[in-house]
Length: 364
Image (tube, rainbow, N blue to C red; front, side, top):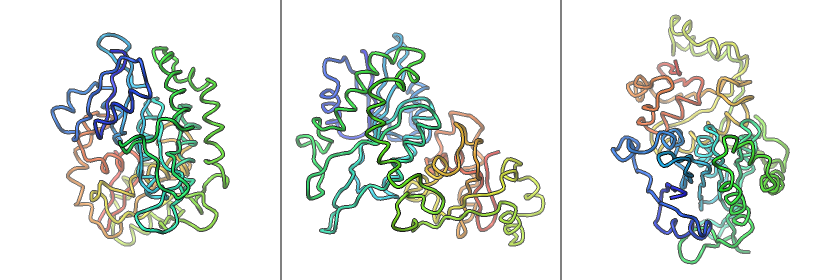
């Protein structure tokens, strides 16, 4: 087989992909439902690493040797209404892919009517800017493409399979990218080669006006929209004052204060968000927003250590005992961490500090 494609969802995805990649020898594998299953243990190590933060719908891997296939693109299919928080729930999947140098695509409506007869929801600038910023930081292709809708805001589907139509501008761009990738994925410098290709330049012309339509999102308007500040509470606080506050409130002891990592204390300012849950509902929408705030507002390099601001989750009404026993099982740079729940993995890797009503947690 030239390609092994892993996917989650209906079997109709196989026909959809065969239409996009005609005359290509493909073997299809379903992604395991759980990361702590025997079937997950049998996955190649590079696929496990790609799934570390979250699970994209489609992973396309190409044959390098008889025993080794390299993932060279992921695709996420999102038919949900595309407003701010909904769109960002898909962002960890892009981040997980890009962080191991695997190009990533998200296909999502630019507008979609919900279940009511209200006006269609328009896609937030944030998800387009998030992909743009990923590409700036990592120099790996990351693009959001439009899932077409009709003049009334209802999605257009491919035949009867509830997937994006094969014949549209966005899919034409994706097909051209895949064809270029098929010719080059075996190259050791595949990512840099594809970044310099004509199709990536064409994709940039398609995507950058959307990503930067209102300028770059910032702390005051993280969604990028001009009309209003995000309804989600977000603060930019003095780090020393915040640590003094939680010490004064007896959330931490003097000893715990002294043990806070210097990397946190050395950043003068901290961006603080306020999750109301950690584990429930797979951590949504907060884990997606956490990843987005990291890339869009904090990060100045490829790794989480490269930040202008701390990224802190302040869970005022939650106890750290809810997750402490799970947190203590994490090991630095261990693929075994993937067997922990998704929201815990994301908080562990992305948040500099989590503040609870009765203590703090951070990555040691």
